[in-house]
Figure (cartoon, rainbow, N blue to C red):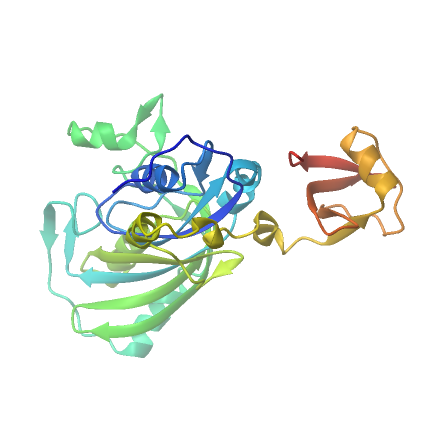
Length: 302
């Protein structure tokens, strides 16, 4: 039975394990409803076919969601060689079939090497990208295809985990905006037989790599059992632990919250820093302007 009650202020991040078969927005809305959170957002869509990590940001954590959107992503993907589809995955209609050449593990790994680093990638027609104000997937469903400018993405890791006569499983680490479907299709083109993706699981969004995740079904069950769901919230500053931390004294903290710049004992850094009060409370992000520290993005305080 669904718990009744008004929506409330909830702050933090839920590391959700998205199930296959639903959109990222549907997963977001279901999770938001379970927590009865007033404000929520996710940090980068997964295709309906895909499963795995979808960080859900509640409340003040939405102010930091952009940093997770920009983070490197990590996936485990399964590729079927010799068959192409109009969507690039197993949900599409078969377009071509071809004989898969015999490849040794070393030959396949050598082909992978050609896709490491910064590469140009043409986004698939079945994607949410807009061109001239129109979503590509809507055009694709109407049977239309338009030119899409190639975009630069970066493949940081491409490790072969398993190889079969007509496919493989691979671990991928990549920059934001990378389409794994397209990557596998391009590998299939390089091999000469075509390919499509049959399964995709996101295993990490930096800095959360292979984290413990929670499912919608688990949250549903715990809510119905009256358990405290807030134990699943990850403090939002954990999403930023790659940034240096600065602790401000009471006077500095007050001035920062008032929009003033302050001088600190720390050496100025060109990048962002996490700001904390002496009590350990996370305040938000700051950056230096010359020798002085100023607020970049502060959180609401009670």
